[in-house]
Length: 232
Ligand SMILES: Nc1ncnc2c1ncn2[C@@H]1O[C@H](COP(=O)(O)OP(=O)(O)OP(=O)(O)O)[C@@H](O)[C@H]1O
Image 1 (tube, rainbow, N blue to C red):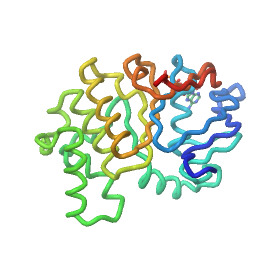
Image 2 (image 1 turned 60 degrees about the horizontal axis):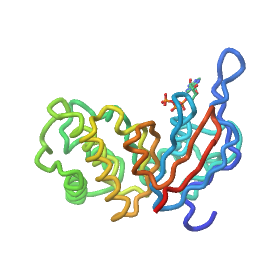
Image 3 (image 1 turned 135 degrees about the vertical axis):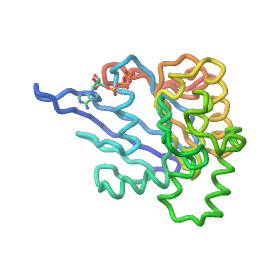
């Protein structure tokens, strides 16, 4: 692996077991992602976008082929090591926000840090820094039910970035947002990419997200059908 290569995927195939012998969701995928990319996987529903993101996020395993994520071979990773890799180095953003309803905004953002070994002072600094990135410090004591959809997704972004991961995986992050809120969260993510060097990989079929991507990987029926860099 070259130094700047964050992810390499080599002849990767994913077969989901079914009653009829298995469904091939990904077929012979070969891809490399470099540190600092702002890229997205696009394609019709069922083309394999979420499956690919789940494998990159070590939430699922390839059936055949190899994948190396942040220098670790996922084929050889125990579930404990995969959890450790995720906890330290990967942030996730989902279309449904996945906030914990009984906790405050502050506690939701603090949550990933409780799995790591930080003092409460250090945690407070990190949570407030993440909330200021998404402009929500004034909502720190609110509960998710008191937030708009755009605010909820900004809390989810703060939770994803609070540990300053190298990689953020965002699966359809704008699916439930209107145009104004979609652009707001995209601008936040672009700023993080530029100022913190965080690598982003999206899964999307939203034109608004596609306009922001520096690289667009198209999936069709489980295969890579295109891989294009945006024109400068
Ligand atoms: N656990 C599973 N068992 C069997 N088949 C599955 C499973 N998960 C996904 N699939 C199938 O694999 C294919 C790819 O699914 P995936 O969720 O990756 O697609 P997607 O491109 O993200 O779709 P969408 O845009 O609708 O979210 C689909 O045909 C889906 O039905």
